[in-house]
Length: 355
Image 1 (cartoon, one colour):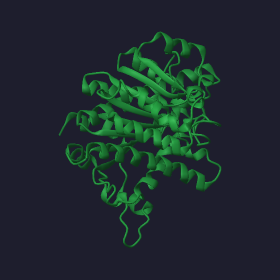
Image 2 (cartoon, helix red, strand yellow):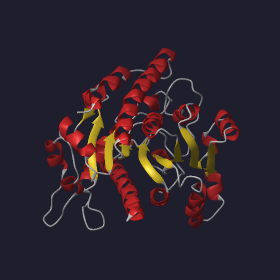
Image 3 (cartoon, one colour):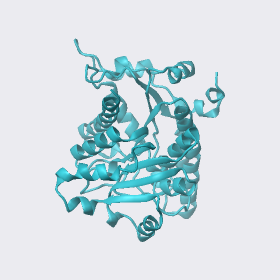
Image 4 (cartoon, helix red, strand yellow):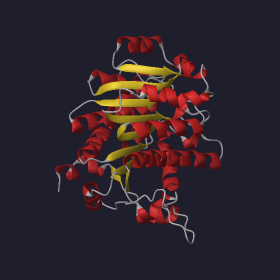
């Protein structure tokens, strides 16, 4: 058995038990759910078997934390994304359009000790802010190891939850495994290129670019009013970074937005790519930052499907969603279901491209 299986990172993986699946699955006669056909390892040996299985293409991992967001003065709640995503994903239909046999739900990273250590810390107090950023760095190490292992076995990682701080360790893990930098498309209203002042959700790409882990970086839907002068200047001075502003999008018909995504992806198609989706780019979605005017859910799905159909996807990262912040139970569930729909949008787009 590989060394990684015996390392501390495996101790961080919480598997989705058969009991949890049974409790969350809604069974109806004549229907088959994704949760009944996808692979869900129950222990280390099963995880190892799945990661070696050539029929498994996608490995879904939850990252339930909001420490990096709080270290960037954002709203807590992103640790809940995995909790609401999981039942929604398990209950999606398995049918002739997509049956789910090449998915593995690997489980979620157990970050309970770090979350507990962050409890009560306030970014408004300098000593607490330093501690939050130190804890974010600890998450970096865990996530990077996990991403590198999955990448080294040729699987596509789909990471759910947590802050956008996790972009950096995911990119690092994949770049290390592939021995080359990645191209990254980020559908986001923020560039996440803040100063390297200690790790948090606002500077994941600053660190990744500084360490030459990224060859191209494009932000689609950048809302310049939410990005400071340092970030705008950094973009202008860095040949790696380009963006399509939300102002540019507002100046044209909605029907042209997908054409603009095509244009943004022109330099990406032959490179190993990461697709980053910050859910605070969706209008009104419960997320770490509330966006009163962003992409509609329908447009976000269209943009994701377009990107997934053109990029050489190595990983997908859905960050910053915070279903727990929704005001009603049905809206919390809807946020989880939206995440599951996005995951299937990506997978179906990739599968269609390769068929």
